[in-house]
Length: 442
Image (cartoon, rainbow, N blue to C red; front, side, top):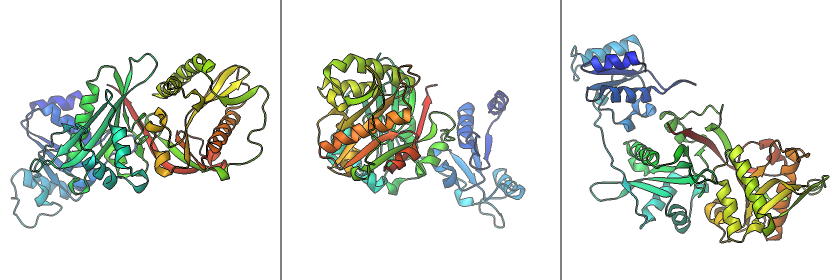
């Protein structure tokens, strides 16, 4: 929408906005432009003419005051709509074609979100397990521990006014981006609505309210869909209905740049399927081992530099939390001579480590599932003479070996980007795929 359009809207007594259909690749959402036109028009009446089913376009959730639904975008469809809008026929006239008169007026509904106090997790837990696939179902205590994070969690609910029943829930977090503690990422971690109450604008009310609250927090310079730590989901589950819903709200998913829908994968490995022989073959000057107390400062410097370079939000805190908790041996290091060139974190499901508490899916799968997370391999380090693929294989081999010694029979690899063929060749199977989505704060 240009300044010329805005000028015409401001001079008009009413605005009729035609939405011909969903956006094509690279196009802006017409629904979003319609919302912009409504804001420009302020209190002026606005009529939306939808040339497709209003549910498919997501218009029911937008609270436009007046919507005309057509069967298509043909001249006869538009002429029929104009005849009704300008009084040439009445809403009860017969013989009108291409017009669903019953959908002419759709009553808007406002659902005021409330802050969730966290005292009763049962209704949220019920909605969670109703809305998400079986693999993402959680025990009530696990969900409660993930949600109750004092100081950097804000969650919201929508309740029915007549009986206070919770019918919608939204979880948000803020996470420090780096060591300085001045920049934050705002995570819109989850929006779920009870199935019987969908398509009524509840999800949109929660979405808009959550974004507004996150943008008010000083230091937040990015909004992410999904969460970093604690991990609910790494992003929007791929090929889910949520993709279309967020596309209609302006989120780009062409995969052409970071934050625009590139795939993130969780992987699962049966340790018996891990290739034996060859993977741990020695490379000149390259060694792998668990971290020790004397490594602390070297680890801090390496992770700060590499996580900033690769935009790994929250990783520095996870490494430092383990070290400060006395669990520095859960940090696996790859060294070229005496310089760190790679690292990863490991955990087992029954540990009290901060990492195990932040990443729920390994223990959800089973008590014999250990985890590997936050794999970091140096780029462009002159001390690193071995290929990244070799370093990754050797690093994973060390992690798998240690977890096997700790009694684990399977390994869960968290939120890995790329490397599909490589992981599959080593015996890993995809457990979940997400879309990596984030936007800089405007």
